[in-house]
Image (tube, rainbow, N blue to C red; front, side, top):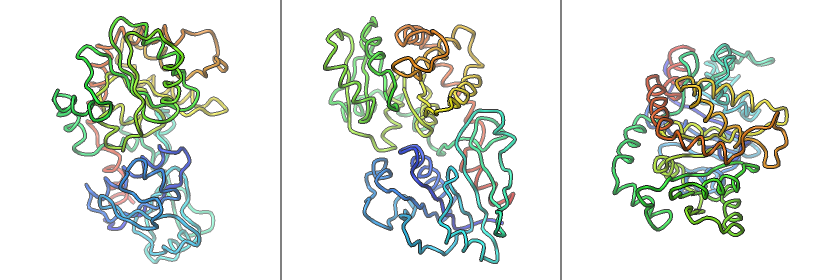
Length: 383
């Protein structure tokens, strides 16, 4: 049975990633599927960084057809929606869950899980999980890269807008002037940096400076920008490299940065997916876990992503990703592996073929329905 009202819940765990995914999903369900959507957040300051139109102090506000509501105590929003999405196992407030159970027609309850390329995800996607005490059933919904998962977030106009931007030299130049005050020379290698703490940013900057042509490196404020500033102050051997640290970009303008650059270093989940849609070679800084499970998750994605490359090309991508994710002090590495400089040299030497592969990968992903469409269809027509 079709649903009209949707509530999406998000509690900030991984800073921008959780909120970024939740906001994109809520906006797309409202805009492209005509649902009435409320997005419940416990920290509006994070969303305000992604969407400056948001007022962090407001308890209720509306933006892009989405009603944004602060999660507070006591929780008084007990008019339960037809579909309830908790992102990343965040659990709606207890009072709301009790109200769900009290409804004669129970809402469809979805737990939107984290993205993973691991094979076990296919077997867990869409599985039910009955509540231990209440007459409610939650279903797990996994984003993913295959037809047996829920797909990836992708607005219907995204790839068209990307292609138009990348094909228009004047638009690209205007964008560069808007963020750094000037446009790069035609032959410059343009690199964007967004990472967690611990990424070997300074080693990468040194490697870029050793290249034969001009390099522009741009980092929105955060760990990578601070590390880039430190390097710029301490290292004078940088004749061929220009570095720029810029204010944090609103979410939609960050897409433009990814489209404007030749190589993108991204982190977490939201920018990881957006880098894939950009159709450019990219390097993922995966969120590190104490038990090392992030290496398994990264390897699972690399196995899928590099399947269409030859052995040397795949090795160049894998080497760069492993070097970027190795702690700065080298601890945690299983064996002696290529340095950032060596990996970067091998990666950039194959940039043309890696760019063709990135475009092929994005086009292949786009042949299936996006995550919002899959989720709405599952809720309206399967449950």
